[in-house]
Length: 481
Image (cartoon, rainbow, N blue to C red; front, side, top):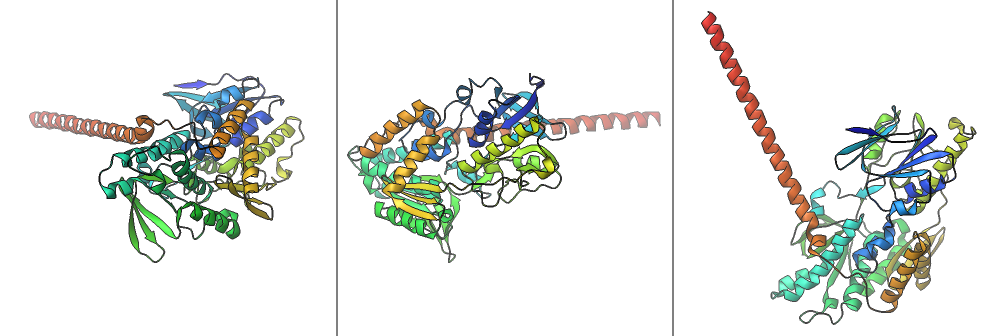
């Protein structure tokens, strides 16, 4: 069933995605003479840089993922639609989304695609079964459940080898997320869980940070990478570089080192923080334009004005755009969205010349990553620094970009409790958190098996009917002869 959106006659701007790019674009059009339709597959605006703190019990999901509708409720020219975008037709200028079997077709005059990226397992999607990523709230809650469940299982273990396996945590990927997760697992074990168990010492856990690359934090340069690595090693994190994961299962992982050596790491909890893959919508848009391509990660190689060839009012922003010198970070999405909305506003006034638009220019405000309590690394232009000052700068910056005073206040309170004390307020786990992915995978597998069986039965029935019809025809021919 196709249901057209109820939209007025003003210029219609459709935005796909409620991340930094999508939300920034919607807010930037607040006073513009346009109707804005924001389509998102989630109900929230996720502040992804703090997702690891949900996974390690510091913050709740509500503090980093406020409801998009509530954020935009006072902006009367915005309509929020929940749904998974299934099709984009650039020629007809429509976007088709689906929610619970209901399809909605939304027409547009201008389109901003800010669908973002998802976790990449480099062609080994089966790894997600045992090594959840760190891109969604579901991921973070599952990781929290798996981390804390390992300590509980180790408390019950009677075999030394099994206890050691349960207390071994492997974080795959030594980028900012991997570094932050590894550091927080150590601090969770040494500070928050100290004295909470009777047959194990949580601080005896083994945390391994593993990457196929030769350095920690490669995008931030050799100096800051070494600084972060040194701090992690002081915490007790084992750094294993030039190590490629070749298999992941319930009992552990298989690793191939640079020299070709294969080895096995028995471990209870695996966290995947390596690699990203762009939303499939990037390819959908590129294939309909006049020669636009996507890179290896599926990001769209946009024009200097962030549009696709032949469609001057179709913009791709955020992690989905591939622009030299623009990293896949919040600032890239925010600045890209602001640029696109300025172009749209100029076009409404008749001041836009699509063929001679000034190109998008990215202003690099730097990058940061926390390593542990009171320690971070930061890169601002040519300035590189680490330690306590970098950590304070990290706190201030991330607090500033959180949405809403209440979220900022409660986040600051939780940080004070965690970093100045030993407690973490979000230590609750449920079996649903821990096993939901496994259960859903099995349900999906059974569903596909059932559908395949039904399809095979229909084919057999069709062949049988065809055979019977052919037999009747032959008998009639023989009788007539």
